[in-house]
Length: 375
Ligand code: FES
Image (cartoon, rainbow, N blue to C red; front, side, top):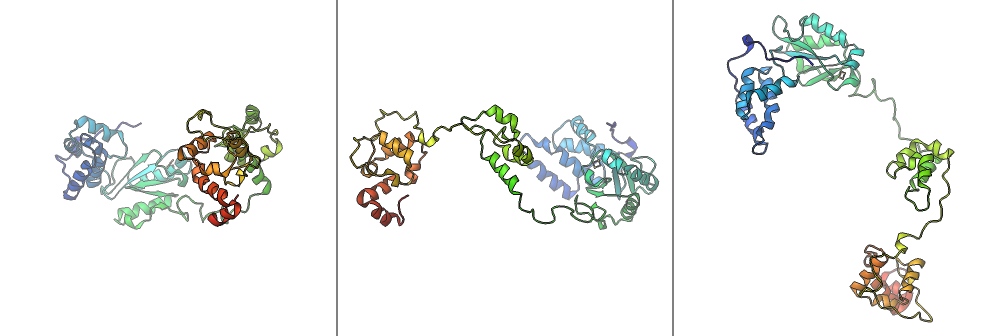
């Protein structure tokens, strides 16, 4: 890192003041920060001072420190730390920052610096005879993909050749810098390939059936599935290490998935919905009263949401008829819902209304009420 010091006294003006417009802007900027945090405005204020005078003078540092109630040394630290702040006078029309970091160096930044030396000055930070131009070498400016590049003011000029940089410098020196379009200086849009895109020109064709199947298989096999030898799965099929990485990893390893089929899953336990929740004790006062199994129990499966397993559980609780379900009070419905771990489904499916219709007139009444056959 280079040593950064303030310019010699001979260059330092006696005082600094923001012009009217910038003074209003500075006040507004300081007020953006919460009480006691005004010092956070130090970088914007220093940058505005630089934009006004071309560089950051000692007087500007002291002025900003006074405005923000900061010690001079604190603002000096900021100004000398960030290379974006110019600590000495620079060209009045352009200060050319040439990136010399590896990608730009490999793509010809040394040639750009030769241009700066010949057209501006042999040494960085020295101005040309008229005082209109200066240059320096800087570290990566984040446009490596379009190397080599330079920055002038707030704009970058990319994909440069020495010849193009000469033209740019001449244009700035003539006071017409604004006429140059920043960004790539070749036939390239942002960082797209030169001459236009070369890939993804048409919509992606349908993925191959085998790839689709392999991805689908991997996605549909959660690693937590009961009975599966988890560690063995993870070893033979990295795509199954976590549920979140499975789809992507599977897509990348389609062949591996196809070559190493997964072992057949062992017998699955009953679905969670069919397992009564332990928290709802059978002795709970809200448990609906059961009855002996009648000779002709109702088909509870006609109630939407009740399948054979749920019907069996209901029967175990002594629930055999529509009338029983239709007569449950809210607390009883909630008890059954919790017992079945249904998470509110009994209310959502409106078992009470369904059971009432079925109890009153069977399927015909159900159709009358709901406009469709049960189940
Ligand atoms: S290396 Fe030059 S912009 Fe990144």
